[in-house]
Amino acid sequence: MKTIDPKDIATVQLQGYLQSAIGPRPIALASTVDADGNPNLSPFSFFNLFSANPPILVFSPSRRVRDNTLKHTLFNVQATQQVVINVVNYAMVQQTSLSSTEYSDGVNEFEKAGFTMLKSDVVQPFRVAESPVQFECVVNEVIGLGDQGGAGNLVICEVVKIHINEAVLNEQGTIDQAKMDLVARMGGNWYSRANDGLFEVEKPLTTLGIGVDAIPESVVNNPIFNGNDLGVLGNVEQLPSPESVRDFVLENAELQQLLAQGDQNKKMEKAKEYLRENNVTLAWKTILAQN
Image (cartoon, rainbow, N blue to C red):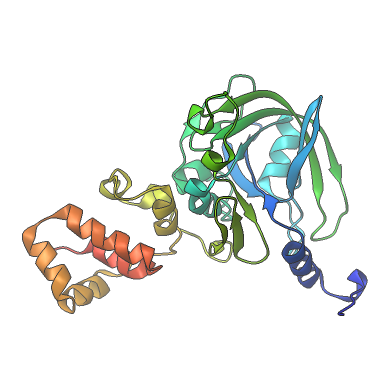
């Protein structure tokens, strides 16, 4: 058996062991605003329920391991003492992953991830309309666990209002777990789906995705593409060059035929097929292809 003293290995290696061994971990998609009311959205898998009376949720925005910096979410909850915790199901997991991208201060992750902002009833932060359950919370306390990279900050939240999408309720008015279709984090790129099992979502943290707000409206509004599709498309760093798109068309007789027919839906269906095959580059080239 491999035995490890946490003090003998690098923090990034220790974090890898911890996150791979302790899971599945539920995901808190935390919505906050800064002191000026600017929205921020970020997912956290150091999260759980800790009390029902009072209703207490706790999540932890940790210090970044690589440079010991703090996240906008922490600054915001300290400034406003408010947060909305949105639960994450499979239908929104790709967009949630995209929202974890470390965009610069002032960038609206709701727009980048293609989520819809809903005004809350009690607190200032917005809710995520796509989330099946949203918890408006006030922050009772923030407990720092250390001052080095990787140290957590426990945000102790009291739920003051709950919003539940009726689509996930059963005939008795309680939550149907199959309809919820929750997902949870494992180690590395791995997730767990309550209704299915393990699946993988590529991390966006090493890249700066263009965001759903940069996707043409003809794609965003096309019912062929769901939220996960948009999250994947928005996670590319840049679009294929016009030259590469042109070359792709010249080499693809099927696409040439679709373009000649002028059937945009069939072209988009082909792009969707590439997304199912996890070939995002070809999906984008197909979307951008012109006669």
